[in-house]
Image 1: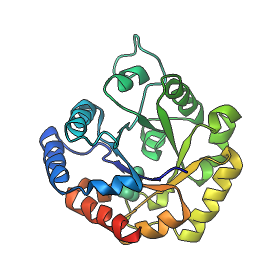
Image 2: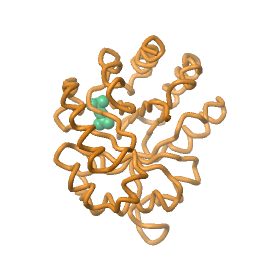
Image 3: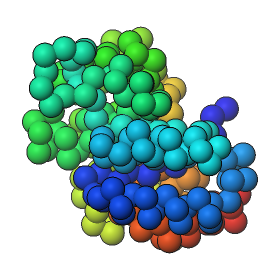
Length: 233
Ligand code: PGA
């Protein structure tokens, strides 16, 4: 049995000084015993992966999974601007978000590109967390072999719920989780979209975890969310 996963995705937010301020507050206030029952993952922007990884190591918090928000579909080589999976491994990443709706929408990622990125990730021993909206469940599954499908964590993120403060209805999430398992097999499925302290417990009851964007940006709000986990458990 896996622990429920809480994934904080900072997206393209924060400067270096803001990252350090977040970590400093986190370091002094984080109740480490949460990690006995929950798995935590932190996804800063690429330039801060190394910094965050070393900071977590220093705090002996390396149980928290350092997560990249994207990866190149190509290996090391002549691909200016791209970050290869093996480079993520070399700075301590263990998880990689792939095909987030913002990647699909603003960067033209297709199910086929997502499939290539998943291959790179798996070949390098990283855990892919693949994002899908309702209308991508089938097309994304079809772009992958059953063997690849069985190795994924899926982050179900309906577009209408992302960053809007309007989380998806619980019955609709339950239905989507079932459809995802039908297509991908009995894998871990987590939910993302306006997860906040007031609704996290509901989503955790019907999923294997949550992805948290907005509510992870302010460290104090994120700590409230963490405290909620302790009381819910
Ligand atoms: P949100 O973002 O929590 O701000 O809705 C979720 C996500 O896109 O991962």
